[in-house]
Length: 228
Image (cartoon, rainbow, N blue to C red; front, side, top):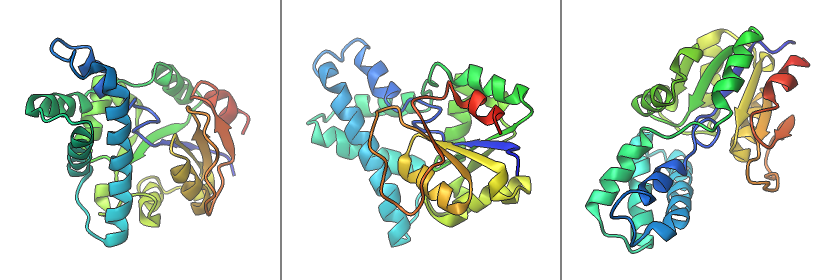
């Protein structure tokens, strides 16, 4: 069955989740903590993901914006940074995360191949809309889908079902692209043609599905999908 729709995870796949802390560290007044921005960013991202999984298992859903704030509060405390102004600035920057450099060209190429494009993300709708507008890629997507429509985070099966509900596709007609290996594995188990963007060169997760392809970044995606 040919691929007719390409669905992207957002954070870490299209948008650089380290961009907020990196940008804040370059601003005036950041000299006291700037050298620690990679650690702060890593703590923030790790707790952000952990909280989505724990809330899904415990059936205590809040939207991703609340999770993002809770994770940042933990990260700031872990780094010994009690600075409300820094907290506010980091959260503002999270709405303006930069897309990875190859993203606009890759999306243009995929549209040129006749594929429909969508985002499927844990992100709250307002977060996703803001990030896509800031990156200048909103017009390229046929839909931006959020887990808020089902009230549970990935990798719950009901999240992946949103794609077929929106587009009327069978799972085998969908290429699903994520930089989170656990997400790509779950999407593969659901029946999507899953592609893991392994930017860090990490080992593959030992889970209940396995992505069909592993790429270092998005550059090779149009050629891969053109092969059918």
